[in-house]
Image 1: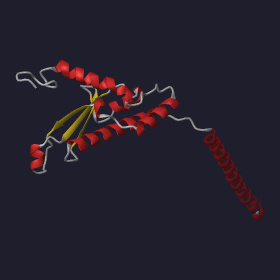
Image 2: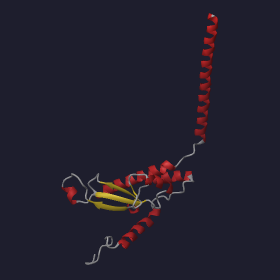
Image 3: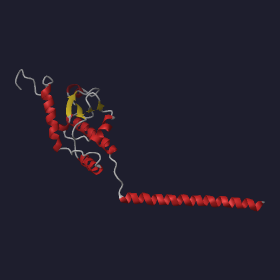
Image 4: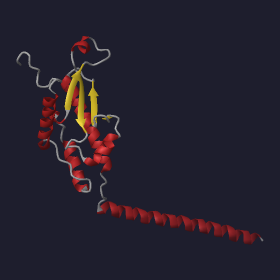
Length: 193
């Protein structure tokens, strides 16, 4: 770095920082599966299976580090181990049908329209970043899976039909037994008279 020039990611050059962020998100399309529209339930299910098997790369999110708070000895006071991960809600790899669920999440920041996760569990930056990314992965998976409704297979439909037939037969049998019990009681009253 030359003297007198700010670093590339310094706050005094916001246009450069946004260019780096855009470059990060543009390289993203090859690493994560692109979500299909929700109307394609089979495609959405396939996307979810592929997404569960993949990991969110660090280039897909904005990462910041800071000092952890609370007790922990000198390591807390000297090292920036707290990881903060911010992911814009309109990222191309987040499915459109999951965005409403993500907006309801406590991790959603309305002012920036992004998901904000932090981790201070581990003593190293890398492990805290991995922890944040795994939290984000689980959050997106749960929000996406809530909106996918799988159609039952023919075997499942047939099983439901058999269960309904058996339940109906059992109901009719109980009704017939109750009717016979009432008939017997009525006949026994006539015998007493």
